[in-house]
Amino acid sequence: MAKKRPQTKPGTAGKAQLADGEIPVVGAREPCPCGSGRRYKACHGRAASHAVAELVQRPFEGLPGECDWVALRELVPAATVPLTLKGGLPEGVPSVTLATVLPMAWPALRRDDGSVLLALQNDSSTGDLGRDLADTLERALVTEPGTPVTARRVPAEGPRLQDLLDPNSDFAPEVHTGFEFWIPESSDNSSPEVAASLERANAAAIPTVKLSSVDSAYWCETPDKNHLRWVMPYPEEKLLDALARLQAAGTSSLGADTRLVGSFRAHGLTVPVWDLPTSMTAEQCEKPAAEFAERLTEALASDAPLTVEERRARGGLTNRQVTLS
Image 1 (cartoon, rainbow, N blue to C red):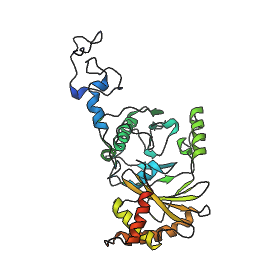
Image 2: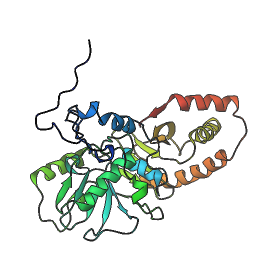
Image 3: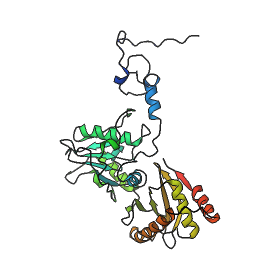
Image 4: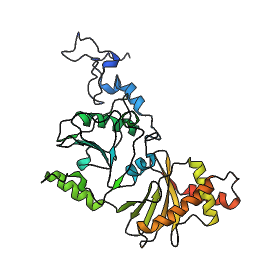
């Protein structure tokens, strides 16, 4: 039996269909703006859906501080970083700041003074966090002051963060003990919703400290034991070989009662994890971490085949590896 031709909705007959380049993005079940009478997902949404399905493995590649971008996305509860835009800030926008999360899971917020807060830990709609965040940032820059930016389906084509941010700027995270940075010091009060969201977020936040002796390593405190989670920029296979060499040699720990327990992958990078005793503070991690970095550099420089013991150690590390994204 032949399929029925899609019926045109009343009022659309005789309308000229829009050219492909003019089709705006709408909800999947909404009528396609081209005027075909079909749902968007069955019409021009097909190409957009295919385009956004491709996952970008390293969405922060090429940005200053890629390892810290990954850490703030996956490991750190509360942190902020000033961002520098290519060409400077637009008129009326005194600053742009990256934040791990914002109240009510807002993607971004344009404050009353015109400054912008951009949230990092929101869901991705395109499989490319760099594109999602760039879309949110562009919308935040032109949103009315005092207004949050809402989530939307991001167009398949558009700029990425790498197109908007200055590649020569510093990326210096400030880790906070809580989320009070949501509310400016000049603000006398906040809405009940923001206050409630702040209370919930503070209650759930795991105490976290960024080490100063090495790059992109974060100490965190949990009830049973503390941890050090260290985002590293090296190729995964090379890094696992180096960690296996140190593991087999008995030099992969950070001191007494500490242990390299494995690693996970996040946004194309590898993150080794150490278990630490509850008595070991972030400050006490600084010297052992710096010494480990020196040992790791030597191990990374070796091209010798792995020994039997090293291969066994590598297998153990690989078996305990988890992919987060």
